[in-house]
Length: 524
Image (cartoon, rainbow, N blue to C red):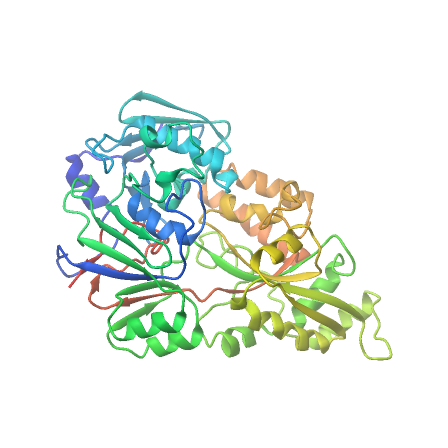
């Protein structure tokens, strides 16, 4: 049996040292209230049955996961003090911290871990996270043995952050639907560093320090007030005047560049590698003319990625050449970048049998987008493609559900979209390219209708390969193939930034950013 993390030192010391993810020259201070601005009202606070950052940010404060990750993609102990994976990759054993309790004082046991995995497996939209899990055995209160049907290299990552909150069986095992359970929003019984005081929709979420948290001395701050400020200008002003200490997932380029000029603020793109947000132009590969990869390649050569990065996003973003985020250890930069080349684009279309008509146009296409934040790049495509004889009609959906229905039912030619990687390619990348995931009516599946048997085979192999270097080689091959097929044209990463007052010690910069516990954050 291979040991991934074991400790011989006393437990409290081992956990404290191993989970100190961000080095600091200062001594952390106890006390104070952290004022944190969030952009949307969560549907509820239980990440076990809900994806998304709105639930993930408060959810990771309320619920602990077995593991946590640093900014270099290294796993560390959290609720699990150690873990082991068998040589055949079919068994993962967790040893839990002893003495850990839920916020109602009940002990956290291996049965709660088993219950939590089952709840996520049955209710969370990311089905690939726990699809190989056949059962979880609980030989004693502090040992959970996860039995798998196949090796699952994404499992450790899937046991961190908001992807596996440990929820209490004695609360959620009462027979009610966990997706609509009343304790998801009120009287929440968590396992994390902070407990819920009040959740007032569209106003705030107030959390306070859980005094019996299983890591001694944590969390450092006494209280977190998460103010729900949906207006970006209001958040910018509040950060400038010190009314708010922290805000994450900020992406307005002008506001970011304005805030960077303030000496009392740290403005950083760090903390989004696992979220992995990528913007792209998606193509319907099941109907003409976008079913022809030559058309897709010509379109890519007509779009100026540098214009998007510098003119629209003012240098706050970075290019993304594939469907794997540049911050991932599996990113392959050595692929066809499709740099701006109008002559080549026109040549490709001429050769593909799409001549210009009397009006100079070759054919027309629709381009759909579903929310205001991506209006600018979507509208940029119209004049860009006119230069190569493609007449684009830009369709702004009146609301997100309208756009999602249209795209998921394959009723589109092109769509400007944003998709998250969610840490491991098995969780957030495979879904876009596997032919088995062409699911009508399901957004952020393989809505492009893309099918390549070689890609299916490579992803199937990569999804079971436990050797990191072999996985990296497989994902390199995958990225080079899809860069040729181009079911989507990848353009840039979302310019997400975290803005933190410099009074904050240990600002969140791990791969999960503010979708990770803030027990190490303190106020000077």
